[in-house]
Image (cartoon, rainbow, N blue to C red):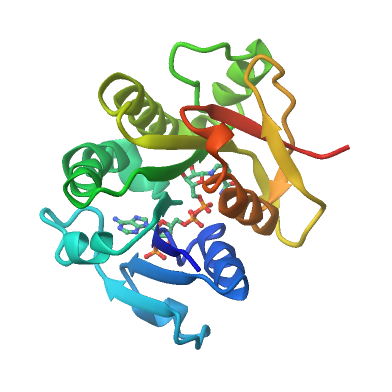
Length: 218
Ligand SMILES: NC(=O)c1ccc[n+]([C@@H]2O[C@H](COP(=O)([O-])OP(=O)(O)OC[C@H]3O[C@@H](n4cnc5c(N)ncnc54)[C@H](OP(=O)(O)O)[C@@H]3O)[C@@H](O)[C@H]2O)c1
């Protein structure tokens, strides 16, 4: 049994992540803005703590971190991210320092497939989508790209993993696998399948220090 400290647990991906982790017998600590949104899950292994990543300092962060094995962030607020890089500020100023203080190594951050990986290949097709139909998410991509830059430049002591997810629907379509950027195979997956991928991948040594896309196993 492992303990997962989760951010974004009330969101499209996060709520599936919490459910799947609990079903596998793990403990989950979820720091959320609205605890009532997780009232549908009754499980003694779930601890829900109220907080926002924009709280500085975020109360109870160290306490939650101290006995966690893995940190998983699936946070997004497209409107707020148009104004400010809230994910980056939180990861850089609060999350990673708390991980260091508490000796927690492994962190998975979910970004989008249309966020450019830091100093790595980014296909022209994804670039075109990013600047046309996905323009409304420009702030979210800029924020998640700044997270990737910070992790690569200043946090190589942390075993970080970035999942550049593509998500388009509910349900399940199969099993996702990691798709190296050089391969650029990309699936528009479901929230549940991305959550299952995150749960598997955060525990995968081979994924450390990668910012891969994901695609369905053929
Ligand atoms: N949705 C997509 O199509 C898609 C596609 C590819 C990648 N992604 C990426 O995946 C990540 C998560 O997306 P998602 O669609 O699964 O999530 P989502 O449904 O947009 O939900 C976002 C989650 O973040 C939480 N959150 C937002 N601001 C917060 C704050 N200040 N403090 C604490 N929690 C906060 C929300 O809490 P509340 O419930 O309180 O609002 C919610 O749990 C994002 O980085 C996004 O760019 C999304």
